[in-house]
Length: 147
Image (cartoon, rainbow, N blue to C red; front, side, top):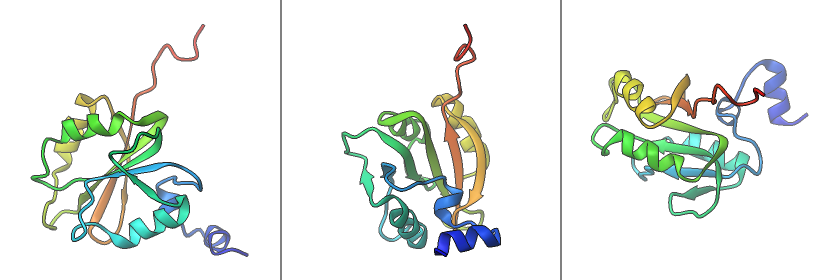
């Protein structure tokens, strides 16, 4: 039995499972800082998808990991930039330091920025000891699928 199957049987989900990252997905990373990211999370996601492409990629991506700390610039602009290469149905994971950590971002800032950028927050997960992840998606069109 594989480690992943064993974890599933025990009800334990790893980071790649919580983030919905699957093998061969193209995942773009923005806001990487050698000193200020969760390397265990990155390693788990890389192990699952193969590699993380940077924001200069020309590829269409399935997911974006956006590391964002207070003072990193305008969040709306960064979210709009993240949407550029994102495939239809793709997801942006906004990773921010947890409360009490340097660079913490107030949840209200995310709540305001996401819809301005054309996204809606669907869930929040613990992304590691120091980081939270907000799952952001483009809202589905109300006319989609109706005839």
